[in-house]
Length: 498
Image 1 (cartoon, rainbow, N blue to C red):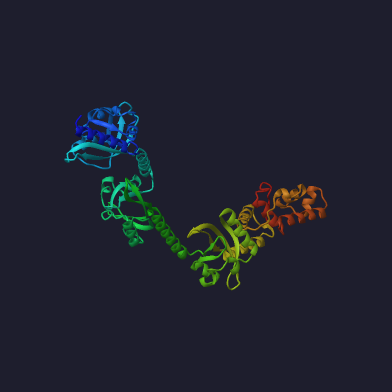
Image 2 (cartoon, helix red, strand yellow; image 1 turned 135 degrees about the horizontal axis):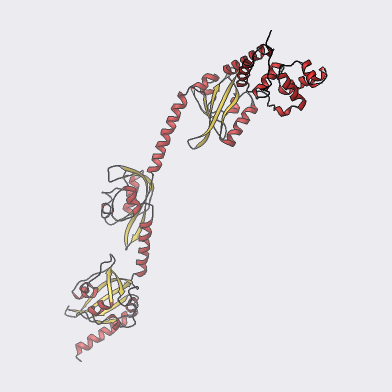
């Protein structure tokens, strides 16, 4: 063996001894791509026990291990790392998937760089491949990719070195209407996610520094020329050993539309509230504080808005009966609304008027409120009472009227008798019902006594008891009471004046 060959072999043994314990994988090969040696780390990264299992050269290695780039494109043997190194190419940070052809279910991820060792004359003498196991890193990146893509929150990632977008998820595409090609590769100057941001100068400075960008509102320009109100925030992160910025977004457009719709609704409510001719008041449900009144309410009560707004209904004391006020709001708290309740209202002049109030619960500026609508029925009620009094006056002696006229008068009186005692026919005793029936036949007390074989005084006592229970004061009123309830319709007879 010549001295040069011996020296060469000695140097290689020393080199192998130096690198055998390294955590990085090392593969040594001749310039003709013959694989000479690999350390334990390189063998482990290939799942083999000795260098022979790697193959004698690049061609044999390619038969045993299929290599693909991370974009899933397969490598032909002439592009295998060892072949590229033999061609004199120096490279670093080449990432490939390595799959044994004998076990396609198993895959490792290697990050490689090349090194060419030259002899004393500068001629290539030895090829070196340096491998790092990037399987865990690739698995984490793959999990991130899946999470990022599946995350419904819109997001894009830009590379800080050139401020170009390198990733975009489906949420961002759906929110904006962009397609992937319109985003990937474009710069933040072309697709400005910080346009019209609240604190744009701060955001740009944080982006330049690679620091966290706090949440802020911005207008995101859309491909159709419109814009969308969003909240944008930036979070720095490392991807493939490159500094990047993750921009995440919250779509505020639905909220803006809801706010516009709410504002328009409240404007319509306010306009109709003020223009309606029916007296209306709005108060807070929690403390009964008056929030607004309309012109019709001020007209009917005599109060001004300054005298009412901001005060509680209890302080104003315009409801004549405290008990009625308590009952009104208790009903609203329990049912949320009421319809057609009689209420006496005290005007500023202390005059009391009769009203019918209807109320409902409404929400104004996210606060539950009560809307009270009142109708002044004072004149109507006075007219009804006068009509009832007139009917009772002319019906003092029912014997003067025909059955048809009595029925009409009874129906008219029934329509206006809103506050009669709630007495049932069954509240009368059997004898009292008999007496009432004979009264409806038009019999006098003596005739009733003869028909029932009772003493006249006993009949008079029964008649008085019937009047008392029915809340009437005359025979004609008793007849009307019975007629209102459809009693003794067949027996009703009246005497015509001769």
